[in-house]
Amino acid sequence: MTKSDYVSKIEAKLEQWDAKIQELDARVAGAKAEKQSELKDQIEDLKERRQEARSKLDELKSSGENAWDNLKSGVEGAVDELKKGFGRVSS
Image 1 (tube, helix red, strand yellow):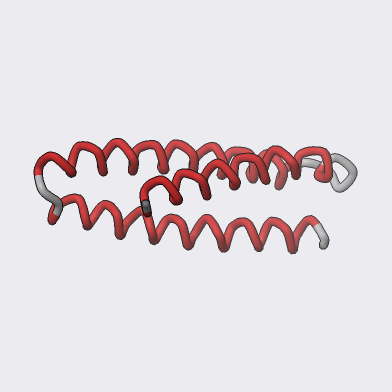
Image 2 (cartoon, one colour; image 1 turned 180 degrees about the vertical axis):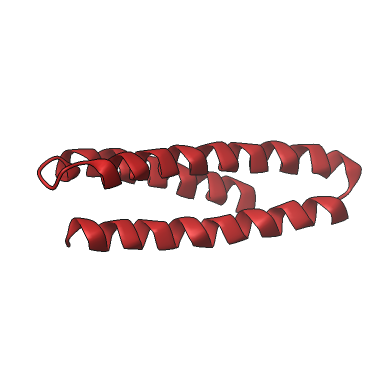
């Protein structure tokens, strides 16, 4: 997979997760009061993890062709943490 292909793949995932975060934001309004606080905290955590993944991806995008392989693991780690965050919210 080329750097460009990888970046496109991760950007597509981030866009999907942005949509899921928006869906969760919409669910907060309809949730019971005691659940709203928990959902808001979880959504905030997801937003932070999403920003971390975006930052890592931006760093990778600005790297040279030779360095991107080294930065790829940081992006994958951030993406994995974001996935885990969504798993906690979904459960």
